[in-house]
Image (cartoon, rainbow, N blue to C red; front, side, top):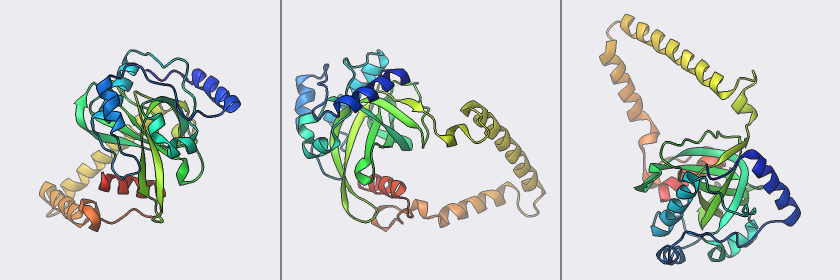
Amino acid sequence: MGCGGPIRWLVILALATVFGGAARGQPATGLTESDRQALAEVADRDAVLGQGPGFFALASLACETAELDRAPQPPPKTPDWASLRNAPAAARGAWFGVQGELLRVQPYRAARAGPWGHALVECLIRVGPGDEGLVFVYLAQPAGIGFAGQAGDRVACDALFYKVYREPNAQGASVDYPVFVAGGAVVASASAQTTGKTGLPRAGQVAGAAALALAGAWFARRFAKRSTGGGRRGLRLRSRKRDEASPEGATGEDAPTSSADPVEALAELRDRND
């Protein structure tokens, strides 16, 4: 849907290797004058994603492109990441080819409902080494279309550049992260964790996990019935006490930060500031 298949991306990667990255990207058609004005007002290098008119103009275009299976032609090139960070306004609203290792994927609440439903998919992708090799891609997929990518997969997509987002890393140093909007993404190659050491495909893993979950639920129900002085009320009380003791309910500046994982720390800081 909109991003082409793995074979197409092998061709793009080969072209990117020969000709290098593109600073300005491929101009997007389908944006109105009002859309372009909204994009011109987008601020860079702040700690707010900013789901404003410019963001949703790109989300609508990306979603429509995916829904019609109308990939940009010619295929967009991989960005020149340094140029993109230094002059984001020149590339805003243009198509680029983004590919790399998927580090994190999670639902992201949309401030406005649209053809994508009520939620987007946030992907944190590594395209190069270090903190400067991290980019955000927000998938505005047509409603009912899922994304099968998992952490560790190699993913690729055609994406519209939105802005440069600035956030301190785990060491407190400011880092600029390019932000894109896409109508979908393809898994170019699955990680070893995705297929598992047994070689089972995802469907097999899901079926096995479901069977284990059902067995666990059956044993838990039998244990709860046999517990003296417990029962359903006791289980609810214990669950509530765990929730009250958990730091996950904390918000704002007093909320505890993630451990040493820089990906988790970045996502937590982004959610707190957005």
